[in-house]
Image (cartoon, rainbow, N blue to C red; front, side, top):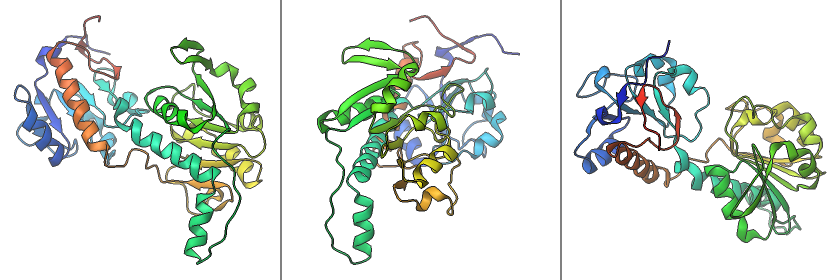
Length: 325
């Protein structure tokens, strides 16, 4: 049974950081919070587990989720990742959870654009030719004048959309429900049946949940025109791998993926060798811009807590006593 929401934000005063570099950076810039080093696997350095109020989870390791009881006394867990699928269920509803929000938006958007350009301009072919010692010109598709549909307009999807603007594409934005914003029309998921037949490049930047798992399957893929490109930089299970594989191996569709299901994709999987397939090992957020952005987000979260305001990107409130804002 859930405890009452009885932990004031003013009581959050001990924050744990999972690695030395981040600990050094944050502890150097805050004096009213006690910083301790804790990777959520061993014991914290400088205090007991039950003394930690805010725990920043490791980015490069999810081993702590094998025993999520380590954070049962923590009031707030701060993820360094944008995605949080599966974490609320493991830590329980009593622990507040905040996602990484925009931390990986720029890096993942770069990967999305890179995948689109590589696939449309056959850069993978050029690299293979180079390694074979072959210098041979070829004619390719283009990004310009393509009809691009981006499904997901959150932090990552929005970053992809803004970077597509100079590429002279016909852009369609799709979200969970239709609405208008300052840039115009955002279509709803229920309009995909009408949108997909006129889509050359489908970009998926969606979180994983009940509504998005297997969203793109056999029926959905069949609506895309021949030679369309499927780009996934959200979560692997948003796309049904078997259905996508069948379309790509047949040569009807192409794919450029930073996320797959399962991860890692087996080396002998058909998508690893199929013509028209580019598979990256989930590297969208793995770049040098990640660290300073995590640093900035943590400091912003601490400032909001100082002000008695809810942290950004709060997935669940846990026991925190939050005021309406």
